[in-house]
Image (cartoon, rainbow, N blue to C red; front, side):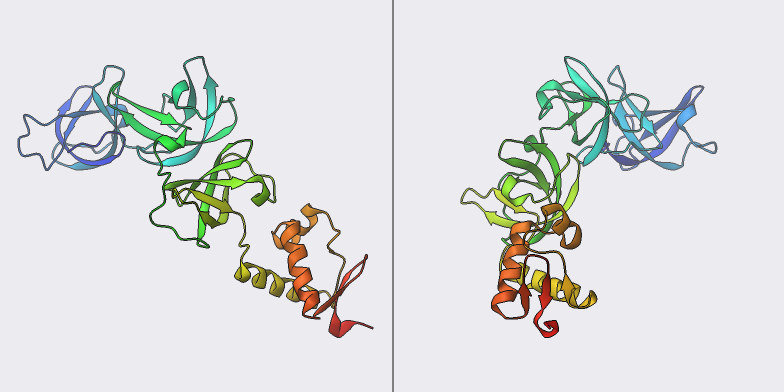
Length: 286
């Protein structure tokens, strides 16, 4: 069966002055099977009837199926970061590598779209209009209720929208989640992919995501990193609990709150001493 918006391996079943006819080689009745047109300008120079080609299939303006041997940047069912090239009252257009840009209708937009900026877009085939469309309102297509992930699990997340509470993210290319501002210790951009952790699975199955582990394991790992950093710098660091958050993140990729907790734990363990100017290993205290 031919899959619209995806890569298909099709048989070259005929040749015309302007191109070739393709069909599914597994079709039981070739006369009833839908065919796809591959223009000569899009076909390899050595294309001949009887061979098979891997092609991207999409509808043209009339609804007829056509093929491209060079696929676009996104296939139906995928979610990728794309650049907006134009915006109108009925939708926005994104560069996806084909002659005609990918339309994201207004009703499928998470927020207004500015040309030139990058957004997280999901591609889908709309049977009502017989078109491949895009969406930045991802909760239509991703799962909101987790049935696979566990709390404290390390995941990959992509930021796709900003809200008053924080950031909406795509988690593990399958689920939606939220990073609250309190858990976003660094500036986040739409389309940015970050390493994160499942902070909480709410009773309704929805995901709260954090950019770092806040449990005992996360704190322990940070404490070890601080000790290693001190040892590498002669037992002294000017990065104290009073330092700016961006300085702390630049060194350890954690929030200031997490850094202060780790310093406090090390101080209680009598592994360091802290003053206004520096943090020092106890073994190096003069």
